[in-house]
Image (cartoon, rainbow, N blue to C red; front, side):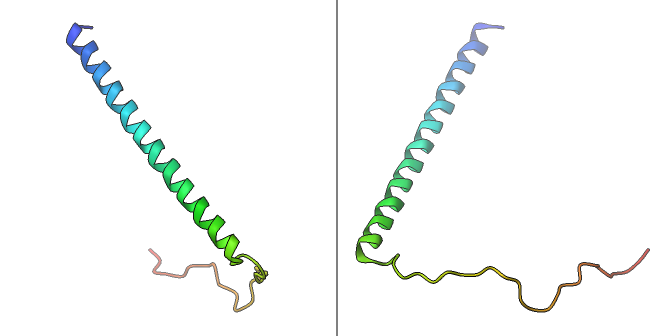
Length: 71
C-alpha cells in the first residue's frame, strides 16, 4: 500500500469521526430539548389525569386472504 493510500484512508477516517461526533452532539441536544419540554409540561400538570387507553380490537374482522387475478 502506498503512502498516498494511507494518507487518504487517514483523512477519510478523520472525516467519518468528525461526522459521527457532530451527529452524536445533535442527538444529545435534541434529547435534552425534549426532556426539558417534558419536564416543563409535567410542572404545568399536563401529564396528570391522563386517560388509560385500552388497546382492544373491536370492529369487523379483516379478511387476510388476498384475492386477485390468478395466473
